[in-house]
Each structure stands twice: as C-alpha cells, then as structure tokens.
Image 1 (cartoon, rainbow, N blue to C red):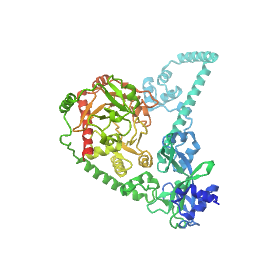
Image 2: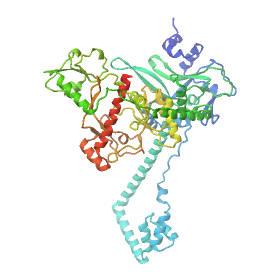
Image 3: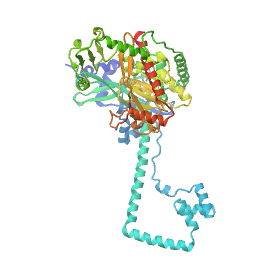
Image 4: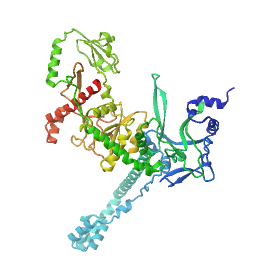
Length: 631
C-alpha cells in the first residue's frame, strides 16, 4: 500500500531529481506543514559584507553538506507587464519589497499649500517694486508679502494716496459684504479647497508612482523565473514563464562562483487544493558558523565564459566580492571594442550575375512576360482568408489542390520547394527566415556589412549577451545616452516592446521564454511636425532564380505617433511608437503625397534624393540575402 510520501515522490519526481534523496522525506514533512524554519539556522546581516542584506549561518550553528533543506516563501509572483500596476494597488507589498531590496524611499509629500501661499518674494520682484514705487527694498518686500507676491498690487499699495487708499478699502469692504451675502465667497472657498485637494492627490500619486518605478528597476536583480506549460484550445502545449521574488531569506542569498548552497524553485502540488510555489535551499558543502550563504545565480544554458560574466551585471549588488566584478568591466569593454574593429573591416561583394540593375530587371520582366503563354484562368491555392475575400479578378479561380495551382499563397512556412513546377509561384522564398526573424536579420547584416550606418547596433540576448553588455558599459563610460529597445525575435504589431536604460532589465530578458533582441534606441529620429513616423513600403520579390528581381511599389504608407516626440516618458506608447492600428489608440495616417510635400517644407531636402537612399538601403538588405542563400 502506497503512503502519502510515495504519492508525493511520484507526483514531484521530476523536481526531486535535482535534490539529494536523503532530503526528500524532510522536504515532504516541511511542505505538509508549511514549516519555514530557516530562521533557526541563519540570520540576516545588513552592510556586512554587502551594501544591502546578506544571509549568514548563525554564530551558534553550522550546516553540514546535505544535512538540512529549507523552504523559502515567494513574496511576490508577477509579470513584467503587470508589475507596476500590482505595486500601486498593494502599498503594503510595495513597502515590503522596498525593505527587502534595501531601497531608500523618498519622504511622503506633505501638504505644502499653506507654505506656498507664504512663499518668499524673489529678489528680482523686490527690486522691480522698489524701483517702480521709489521705496526701499524692505518696504517693497513687505508690500509683496501683503499682496501675495502680486507685483502690480504691491506697487499700487505703495504709490496710492492715503486718502484714496482709505476710500478703496471702504469700497472693498462693501463689495466683500455683498459677496458674502450672495454666497460667492463660500463657492470660491470650496473651489480653493477642491484645488488644494487635487494638488495634494497628484503629489501623492506621483510619489507612489516613483516608488513603484524604483521597485520595478531594482526587482530585476532579485526576480527569478520558472517555466511551465499550459494547453491551448487546439491541444498544443505552450510555454509560460512565472516571475517571482522570494522572501527576505531567499533574496538575501547572494551570488558566488564557489557557492555553498543550491536554491531551486519547487511547485508543491496539494492535489485538489491546488499548487503552492516555494523555493528550497540546501547546503552542498559544510558551512561553518558565521559564514555567508551563497548560491550560483548564473543560468546553466550560458556556455561562453564572457556571457556568464556579462549576466552577473544584472546582480551587481548581490555578487560576493563585487570589487572583482567591477574589474571585469574592462574585460567586457575590451572584448566589445575588438568586436567593433572586426565589424569595421567587414566588406561585401554581391555574387556575380545574381543581382540585376534596374534596367536589366525591367528588360527581364518584359522578356519573361512575352515568353509566358497566356492562360484563360489562373488557379490559386491559399489558406489565407483575406486572399479569398479580396482577390476578385475575373480570370482567377481557387483550388484546394496545390499541384493544380499556378500561385500558392500560404500563411504557414512553405516546405515543398522540391516539388514545385517551373510555372508555379509561391508567396515566399527559400531561407526567408534570415530577414523575417529579427535576430537572424541582425546577424546577417553584421556578417555581411559589419556595422552599417542605416542599422542600429543590435544583439541577440540569447547568444550575444557579452557583446551587448560590453557595448552598454562602453557607452556608460563615454557618458552617452544609453537607451535600448527590446523586441521579440518573431513578433510584430508593436507587441512586447520595451524602452529602457536599465542594464539588469535587459540582461534578464535572457530568462524570458520569449527570446528577444536588444537594439540601441534611436534618440534623435527624423520627425514629422514633431512626431515620430514610419513608412511602410510594399516590395514584390518577383523571383530569386536565376537572378534576383525585386520591385518596390511607388506609393508608401505613413503612420504617425499620436503625440509629440520626447524622452521624458519612455512608457508613453503614443509618444514612442507609431503602430496604433493593433492597439487601443487611435491611428494617425497620412497619404504619401501630403507627407512628401510637408517634409520638403519642413526640411531643406528633395524627396527624390531621400527615396534613393531608402531604395539603396532596401537593395542592400536584398543583397545580403544572397550571402545567406549561396554561401
């Protein structure tokens, strides 16, 4: 008869494989009772030897290898997309995380309206009143205070005849009595109270938002991940990432290249009661009394030593012997500079005979058209709804048989290249993933052209972590703007884009199940009436064999950001991005003729020259495809 412990082992066997077997039974007992007993053996230190918190074995205790296993609670499970909103909705959680991450919190704003009402007059105002009223600066200051820093009123107060002033005061008293009689004064007082309340509320909201931003920036040095799969409606599994911050004990365990404990996430299944996420840690060597507790924070999938070093810059405040990691900054910047020198020497020669000039391409298309037999009907095979919906030419007929089709238009990756007949055309071309995936395109540009001026420096966070961190640190040393945008490899429509100067945040994208690139953010873009814009061109790749022919549609589509460009708020989507048609925001479009007309008015340019530069950039992109395809 199986016991509860046997069932526990069966259910959790894959997680238990990373834990010494002699610790399974005590782990089972502690999980059943939610027994958090690490405090009996370890304690928190502050400023010893780390600037923040560190975990140490108590002076009257010691831990032997594999002698104990401890539970760590998860203080916060979140996602990067919802983290700030969750913090603002739970101020107690935010306060706990601020303490856990050793964040110095700015003082809560006080109601300073009364103080602002009594604001001291400025020296310039005092001088103006003194000169205009021909009085001493002391008298001018007193008049300004009496008139709430209103310069004109202060001058009148000092220059009006005493008899006239007495008459004016009598008139003012009479008007005030009338105002009090009809209730206008009360209404004014209520408006002032409301205005003060709104200002105070705004200060409090700004203060809370600043705190949430501070926790968000710091959390990347503490947050951990585990992955799990969920079934989609079609039955296929999809991978998800859970982001979590451990409690005060777990978050105080710092990094060492020679760790004395292992820390693992452990998802405890209580059957019908659900799943409870914990982390566990256990000693992997003897730890004497007073010794600091350390683990290895570097992921096992990082193989290059330079990438392992780069990854640690996400945890600068949690690395034991942080002076050693600081000395490694020079190593990473040196590697980056060597990498840049290689890119500068990169040269490209297009494959001979593979790429035609514009005139040669037109002549080839003309000859091809004359040589092609005219058909009464063109058969199209497609799995794409909009093609079936909008392709209404009289001589087009649809077929479900790919073998009978003249044109195959598919939204899936086409695999049947070897079975194509000479007359058949596909809406894809071999190896197109070299440009449709952002990391592949970046690699191809780098291998072909090195570092061209028409493409911002771009790094694959999964495989080029040290190159990116070296670039970041080098830019930091040069005291230049260090903004980056992270993008998923294979997403579009403005999804999952983030702009940040937070090194730890970018490094930790390596742990995301959605792989990303990091690209230097263009901080001085060309603007249209102060707004960012993008131009969408349609390029028809007519053929790739025996040589490349690509045609660009003369008309392009212009999309504008909804707000004037600024770097003040990097999270304002309508300021930083132009893709609104897939979002909740209103889309601003402009016809290409109006765009060209206004750009030529706004800048000293001729659009024909600009268009040639754009065409050359597109041509360069297609040139490099042949490097990938034929080498």
